[in-house]
Length: 133
Image (cartoon, rainbow, N blue to C red; front, side, top):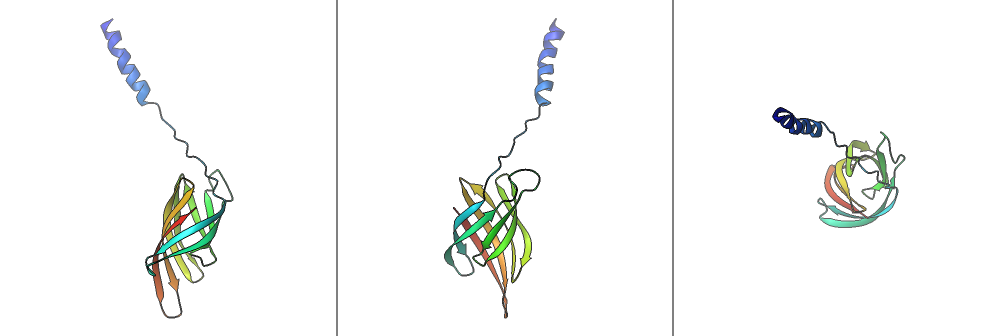
């Protein structure tokens, strides 16, 4: 009987430790127009403008989003959404090279990115912080 009582907690411990908890990430519907407040470290100035976020797929393996008018330059940046995290892989778009990351918080989009602007005389590196709401 004592042996049986000893095995019950061991059995419960094995049962509980073998359970896997799955946390399902919510799908965010981000598509729409956002007002942007951007701080530029290169220019040491705040800028305001609008962006449009296009989200072709709300769920599934394709978690891509497109940010139109990024850096107030009219370009479209490709980004990836993983839960509430945003990843902007390095990409060359026209005279700009861009990469960054960010997150979603309470309906706001926060992004930190580096933009290299190729001008006729130099390459300007601008680190920016964006809050879109």
